[in-house]
Length: 281
Image (cartoon, rainbow, N blue to C red; front, side, top):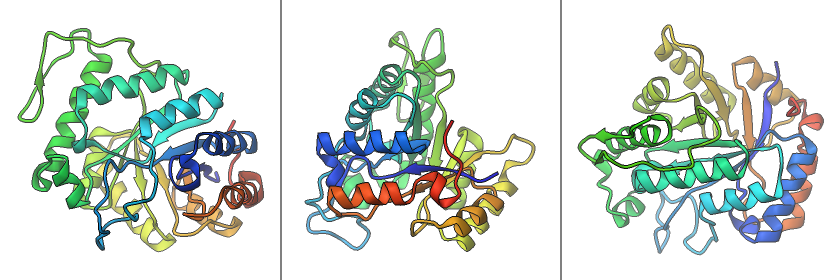
């Protein structure tokens, strides 16, 4: 079965302006995209360093606030964080924000998370890079307790609480969790703690290799839902090839830094029906 198409960058560059991001979201929903995805960078190194994906003056809306705005302008399309750098966020506050987005959207949230890699950003937010993986695992457990347990509680090295509660709970039971990252540890985290895995900027050969390694890790558990962002917008041949290797969703990226009119043309030109991808139901 061919993959569905998602659309990335719904909260940066041209889409950091409220009317522009709403217009792009409405267009994507009308054309049959299955999801909108927002990036997460609280701060960026200034001046830019080699590892930084963006210049420090690129406008990047907060992902949770952006998704709340998009929820108000759409009705069906899924709303994904792609990805939240989980160790940088207070897990109790984040649990409340994510649950609120799921409620306001009528149950359309996809919680995408990873441990992060941009050391200046991590350190500026008080996160030692060497323990970001352990923090992420604990934070996810704490968030799930607040979402699903009758008496939420979590006792770990990096987060410790009981005797508190938070409502409203998410509409979805459970909220789908997608983890990102290409390392062996990231693949294991996906298998142990998530419903899906997101591979960023993967050509066909790299995607096939990582999906094979992911499959080795799954053992007897059900297959993960696999999302991939390719390095360039796919044509029908690429869509078919990614689908054949087990990709369930391709999340494509408009030209970064392009004006709104060019972003809209990209969304139209690469709509699911035009490139052979499955149209969202």
